[in-house]
Length: 106
Length: 119
Image 1 (spheres, chains in turn yellow, purple):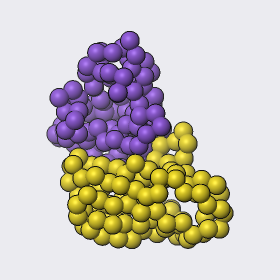
Image 2 (cartoon, one colour; image 1 turned 120 degrees about the vertical axis):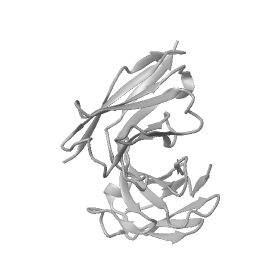
Image 3 (tube, one colour; image 1 turned 180 degrees about the vertical axis):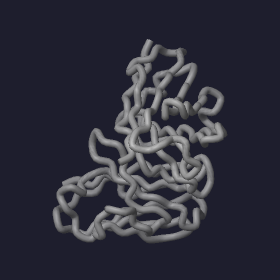
């Protein structure tokens, strides 16, 4: 299985901050990486596909980059509604696996 | 707007079978453009892919679960289902049904249904 490791596990930030979350794969996954946002008690919401393609309706303050084994999700200016847990997911080869999550808190 | 809704028992006894159904509304399950899947999330933990089913009935399961899991599609009801047998406390989780792109990205999710396994 391809292991996905996110860092940090928890991130404390303030409204307006620039935030970066890292996701590392245990082997190359090219650009086959997605990012999801999950708020408490809610289902995950797809933000980004293929490492850097923003899903329709996702604010432009979110961006993704990377390829191979190292990827980042950046929020350029944190808004109150962005406080949530973020997960990366590889879809290079089955079983499809997720990172353990990064909680962005105030 | 596509919506997915999970249904099924919230409590299952140890060693018995967990059965969940996902009802799709606002769109047809009978499309070859997408697949359908299940993802679970144990309390306070991350996400785990369980399995994916195609309209043809072909299925793909997480290797750690494939000996215990089955999925099916009922196009007449616009539903798909999950069965997980011989459950233990480790199967306690929120279970989400999802729409799956051919690339294996989960782009629409149900609200999730919590399932507790207990004796």
